[in-house]
Image 1 (cartoon, rainbow over the protein chains, first blue to last red):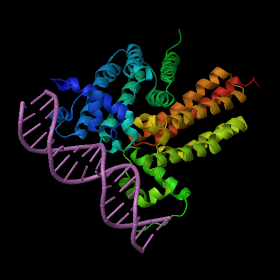
Image 2: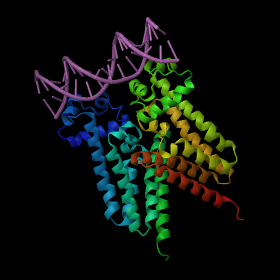
Image 3: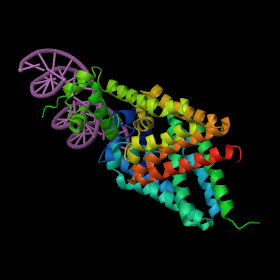
Image 4: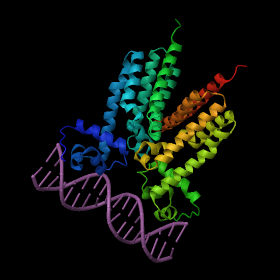
Length: 193
Length: 193
DNA sequence: GTCTATAAAGCGATAGAC
DNA sequence: GTCTATCGCTTTATAGAC
């Protein structure tokens, strides 16, 4: 029964999945323990300030993942490749629609007020990074900004609808549609020939 | 201090707003009382089965609103007018992006399991009604279905992003974009001239 | 690093006075 | 129809044994 874990890096992903499954308010220590196998004592050992610290560190870890795997490639990489990478990584990260976006879930309930800055930054940086990538590919600023917002919002809405209907294909269709729309946007902007 | 309310129809909208603000798990009786001014005693008078009944009746009331104001016009009304009505009603209902979709919020946390049927029906009926409307306007079935899913998912994503960034304009832009896309879809399908 | 015991507060829900 | 008091239970959090 005793689960031996030495580093916080091993417990953070487990806690993150518990928050995903239960929400912030729904994630009591007893339920987290039941889901992860980590006892209350261990949880307080890693997070002395309790639940709020747990959620804050989970959000930071999520943000770090997106920075290295999505934002930075979009901000500095070759545009077409970075875009292709984003569709692929986004699909993988959200388990083809079977995994909830924790930041999005937190944005929808009262939790937003506790983690306002992290939630705000997660979305605005995603939109900004994507818009910048499109601009570097030749799309004008207004269109780039509009499409970036449209894409990020569609990903979130698709995850929500997939979860609501129990049909992951909703998310996969939305991602495929966005990829085609991006392709079209780039093709139109490119000089003919 | 004593707030006198005679009918459930007066208390339901207040309770709904409390759930919107707090989420299901976050909506304790003390917090609901603080937000709505309705005491715990009164709440149990109207909802003898407690919180679960409260949320269930709120979801039913929301569904009823959508049936009469959005689904039925889409299902039986003149297509172009019904479509225009939907954009307008959706914008109004969600307070131009300042109001969360409770069904969407419930879909994202553990609450989904309690109200699975209501959440599922809300979204599938919206998609079906919109797709049917587009078909009656001459759009082929596959395209109608795809756009309907895209529209509903975009509305939910836009509400989420608006709340996350604190910028209602995100929602208004998404709604405007959808209206244009729908217009284009209908125009392409129509015989020329 | 993990577990158990325990304290203090808050929870949903009930009963009964008014 | 509303309010207060109260019951069990669960919650977060702490302390200390191992």
